[in-house]
Image (cartoon, rainbow, N blue to C red; front, side):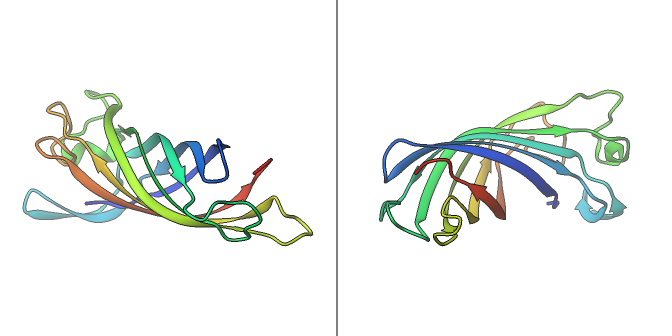
Length: 165
């Protein structure tokens, strides 16, 4: 159970006024935090670097035509990659012994895109929530999805530019 702060980007292709395909890539810095591990609390330790990649289908129930704030639901599949760092050795995730490990992950969620008025109709903001399901992997580090799948919550606010919608 750890938190990371993420930056990323994505591209969306609108198939119609109601359906779009989206690709996303994010990178996260594992900042130092207190983490419960092996029945103890590891104090102020840095977490692994986390990368994620996903392809999603986005559905706008009310369509997007002429809307300043279309809401959407979405789901997709991708991968989460963990990169060990020197401080993650305490978790049995030693940078000298283990390389980056990748896990298949699904996501489901929704959000809203808020476009500006007539002065800049293609610019706006996006507020999005996703629940991620990270599949287990027997080669995983002990603290992350080794014996069971894990869930994660992702909330983000971002700026967007839409070429054509």
